[in-house]
Structure formats: structure tokens, C-alpha cells
Length: 319
Image (cartoon, rainbow, N blue to C red; front, top):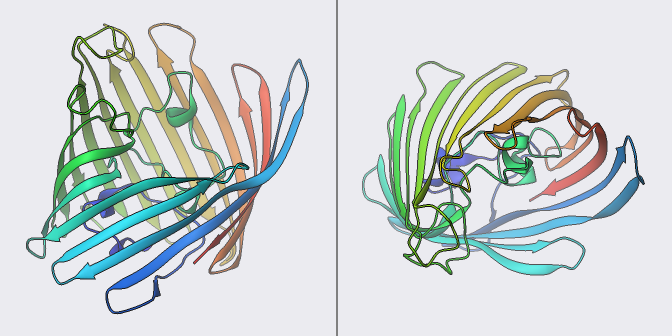
């Protein structure tokens, strides 16, 4: 699991994850780095049509963390896919106003959703239908704006004002302003519950054919001993079209069989008013921690609607 204590407080409100563990590499009193190299082989076997098989380096990422008193900053540089295109993923400055209260400004990842955006935070190779279904990602993306976070021992609050919730490009500055608010509860050891509201406003010059888009996302998890279980639900409003509503869901269980060997089962889906048929899948993924920094896993994923089976093997090294 990513060590959230190394992140600014606002980012530490993101979802849980489980993969190779790592610690920051300290370069100086003010600068440290971490990152990962992620490689995979994957294939698809539909009921009809040709089968596919691919192998590639998925991502190489280096994250820079700076600290100057009550101010910290983070910048993530990511090389994606076989082309090796280098992108600026996120970059923000955080002011720790009090031990419990912080404020960040820049480009940062949305607080919404249970599943992580990076392979180092996932329990399996693929992301769920909430992120890959025909409706596109329901979670917020890397967002430009300002956020404020308050964290107490058993609850946390988060709010952000954004140039856009679902587009991290920043090209539509102030034409599609968005808002994000989250309440998190940690009532007892091992139990976490979070509810997030996301809303984006459109104007006459945007490409949308309606005036706004919204989502309510709630999830809860229990993690204690070798067992982790989670459930998630999203209600979608005006989703890509006026009066288009939808529902997304996820149920997941991960069991640590030994200190190194674990297995994950996940069921997820998404259903919109149009099309009426749901897009659902079930995934099974065993994993093996070769070392604290090196995780390998396999995955078989069955799309229950298109009757397509997908296979994958992944190798993630973190530092």
C-alpha cells in the first residue's frame, strides 16, 4: 500500500490501494523522490473475431516531493505506453495551516472513488467498469484548482473549486467550472467510508449539450488482518446528455493467503438510461510480492455482456 503519510493531507483522502510498498528516496533535506516502473502483457479472446496479445511498458513515473517548513510541493512526471510520451501528470503546492487543516493549489487528483488511478494502488491489473465502462470514467480526473482538507482522527472533510472535474487539460478554463466535496468517516479500526459529490457547470461555448453534469459517489471498506472487502455505488446525473441518469457499482474482496501471496475477486458494472443494458464484468487476480518493492500478478477478466475474456500479467517495481 502507498504510504499516505508521505503525501500532502489533501491527497491522503484518496482511495485505498495495495501493491508493492516503497519509501521516498531522500536526495536532500528538502527534496525526495519516489516512483515506479510498470510492465504488462495482455490479451483479449472475444467469442467472435480475432484474438489479441500485447506486451509493453505501461508506465514509468517519477514523483518529486519538496518540503520547506509548512509548505510542501509535489510534481509527477509520467512516461506512458510504448511511444514513451512524457506527460506532466500533476503538480501542486500544499500549505499545512494547522496540524489538521491544509490547502493545496495546482493540478491534483480527484478525491472521488475507491479504486486508485495508478497501478501501485490497485489490487489487480485492470480498473473497474466505473472507470472503463461505455460511459467513460465516472471518477474525477487530475483537476486544476484549489482544495481545502481537514482531517481528524475519525472523520475528514474535503472541498475543491476546479476549472473542470472530468477534464484535466485546463483548456476550458472557467468555461466548465466544477466543485467537489467529500466527507470521510473512520469510526473504528479498519473501517473507512467516504461520500463525494462532484458537479460541473457548462456554458453556451462548451461542447456539452446541457448545462451541468453531476455524480454522487459513496464507498466503504473493511481492512483488517488478511482480509480487505469494499463496496461502491455511483449515481450519475445529466451524464453526457440532459436528463441522462445512470448507476455504477463495485464489490471487491482481497485475501492475503500468506505474507507474499494474495488473491482478489471483483464485480463491477455501470448502467445508463440509454443504452438500457448494463456493462458488467467479473475479475479474478492472484498476486505475489517478490520483495517489498516488486509485485507480480495475473488477471482473468470476463466481460459478461460482450462475452469477451481478457487476460493479463503485470510486473510493478516501486522505489
